[in-house]
Length: 128
Image (cartoon, rainbow, N blue to C red; front, side, top):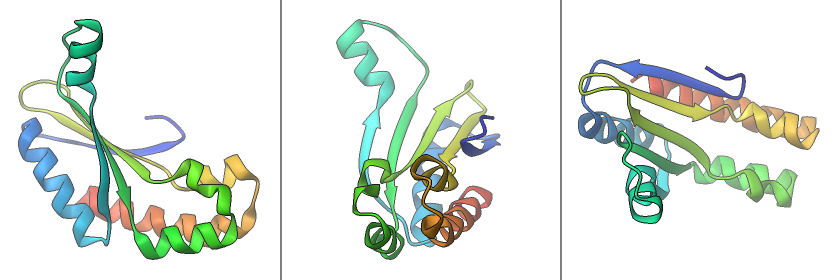
């Protein structure tokens, strides 16, 4: 895993993992604002087949509001991307951008408390 994300690999199929990921995010106060079906896009635009790969743009409104209050340009780094991608028929990877990247990228330590809280909630969602 990269130093800019957190992840978990599940012994479950892709569709089941997507459903479980959405439910776990909702349980932690995240809504899914955007959804990008990477595999379908690559097929449509490039004619390339790839394993199922979905990017969910997750947002926790209270945390997003706090972050925007600290730095209005932080919207460039929102929402928190959560990727669900099939490794094979029985293993699926779920990974999320580490919100602490916002602090590193902006150099604004005032974002640290919000980023840490978002990381904790995303971690709980991945654990669930």
